Amino acid sequence: MVTDANRREGIPFGTVVQRDRATLALVIFVVLFAQVLLYPGVTDLVTALGATTDLDASTWFLGAEFAAFVLFSGFWGALSDRTSRRIPFIVVGGLGGAAGYAILAFLGQGYGVRFETVLVLRFFQGALTIAAFSLAMTMLMDLEGGHGQNMGAAGIAIGLGTALGAPIGGQLYEQGAFVPLWIASVALLLAAGLATRVTDRSPSGQRMGLRDVGRRLRGTPALGFPYAFGFMDRLTAGFFALIGTIYFRETFALDAGGAGLMLGLFFVPFALLQYPLGVVSDRIGRKLPVAIGSLLYGGTVVAVYLAPTLWLAGCTMVLLGVFGALVSPATMALVSDLATDTDRGVAMGGFNIFGNLGFLAGFVVGSVITDSFDYGAAFLAAGLLEAGIVVVALPSFLRLDLSQTPTFSE
Image 1: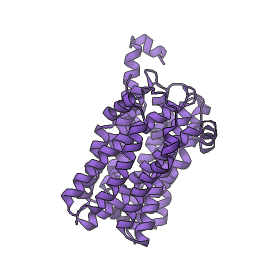
Image 2 (image 1 turned 90 degrees about the vertical axis):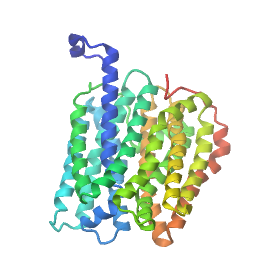
Image 3 (image 1 turned 45 degrees about the vertical axis):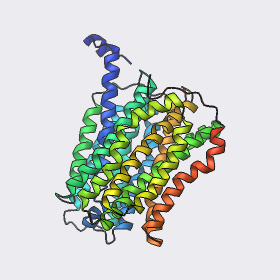
C-alpha cells in the first residue's frame, strides 16, 4: 500500500515494501531472540523465581507462555481485523511483553512471590508477546511483493532469532539468573519501536482462531499433512529447549553458557539453510524434502542421546539442524501450495497454531516421560514421534497432487 505521505515524500512503492518487509522481519527476529534467551538456563531461572523443583517447574514456566500463545493468537488476529489496524496491537504486544519480562525480573529479586504467581504473570506476558509476533507475521502475509520473498524473510528472521538467542542467552546467565529477563524486556521495547516505522495495511478480513482453522481443515483436508508435520517438528524443538538443555547440563556437566552453545549448534545451521533448502523444495517439490528430512530428523534426535561424548553430541546437533532446515521451509511452502490466495492467511495462521501446540506438547511429553522413565526413553519417544508421523502418513501424502508454487523464490 502506498500512502499519501509516501507519495508526498516521493518514496518509490518498491522501496516502501522492501523497507516494511525488512522491518517486520526484524520485529519477528527480536521477539524470537528474546524468547529463546531464557531457554539455556531455564532451570536456574525458575529456581531463582522460587520454584522448588527444576524439571517440573521449567515445564510449567515454558508451558504457560505457549499456552497463552495458542489461546491468544486468534484473539489478536480477530481484534486487528475488526479494527482494520495491526500496528497498534503489535506495539501494545511489544510494550506489554517488555513489561511482563521486567516484572518477572523485578519480583524475583527477593520479594518472596509464590511461584504460582510467577506462572500467572508468565501467562499474561505470553498473551501480550504473541500479539507482536503473530501480527508481524500476518502483516508479512498482507505485504505486496510476492509470498516467496515475504515468507523467506519470515523464515530467516525466525531461524536467526533462535540461532542467536540460545548461545547469547547462555552467556547472559553467567552474569546472573535475571539478566536474560532484563535483556528480553529491552528487546521487546525495541520491537514495539520498530513496529511504528511500518505502514499499517488494511487486514484481509480473515481470522485465525481455532474455529476458523477447523473450518479450513474441513474445506481442505490436505492441510492436515503440513499441520501434522509442523506440530511434530515443533514438538521436537520444544523437547530440546527443555529436556535437551537439562540433559546436556547433567550428562556433560555444562553450565548455562555451554548448554546455550549446544542449542546454538542446532539453531545456526537450521537458520542459515532455511532459504537455500526452501529453494530446493521449489525445484524438486515438497514431498521428498518433507518425507526424507523427517525420517532423518527423527533418527538424529535419538542419535543425540546415543552420542557418548560432548564433541559427538555437538556434531549430531549440527546434523539435526541441517535435517530440520530440510523439513521446515518445505512444510511452510506446502501450506502455501494447498491454500488459495484468498485463504492463505487463515491457512498459515492454522499452521502457526499447530506449531505452538507442538512446542507445548514437547515440554509436556518430554517432562512426563523423563520423570516416569529416563532421558533415553524421552529421546526415543521424540524421535519416534517425528519419524512415525511420516511413516503413517506417507502413502496418502505421496498421492497428493501438488502444484510446485514457488514460495521461497520468485
